[in-house]
Image (cartoon, rainbow over all chains, first blue to last red; front, side, top):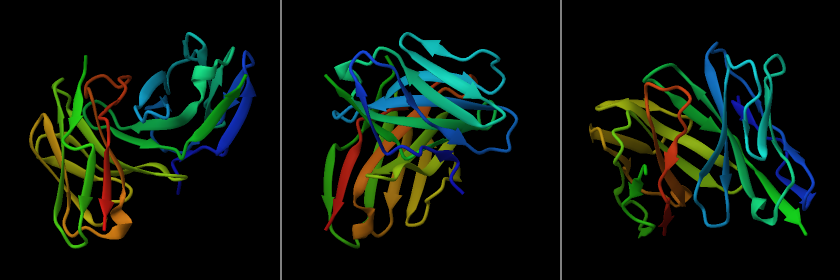
Length: 116
Length: 114
């Protein structure tokens, strides 16, 4: 079974608008972490934001925020005020395991295109 | 800055060859990972390691093996390369004791098996 599900293969957003990229996850662990990465056409993987399963508040990093709904097992990325440079692939990832033992799995990604 | 270095950016190998992909990190990270990235399939975990000589199968280990003899180096081995192993391979590492730490990625190796 897929551990991380991203149901939007591609999305368009108008420049300066906000956009939400969906991510749902499946785990039986009580302690886990959720990450979002950006992969521009250059291919590098850029870490954006992290949410721990015990964090009560949604994580925010600049224009990025993570809408964490634990009961629904969803961890959607919200990008506010989209910029042309936000056009990229976006991957949701989950870390399972504690301390030294960490297994990190990724979703299939969402390709975001920002329209001027 | 954390640096994760993969030995080759591009590699072309013949079917049946034994292929080694090398990954080195310079930040004393406990965890290291190998993924393959294919269009529409995202990043799929092949193997991971949480300590020297410790390894665990990921989601698609068939046809691959790994070696971690030193903490900084994690090698992916294709015992007998096949055309369906043509892909982009990404290595990553992360700091073990802190659960919130992100994984740092290498630049990737694009492997073509002919």
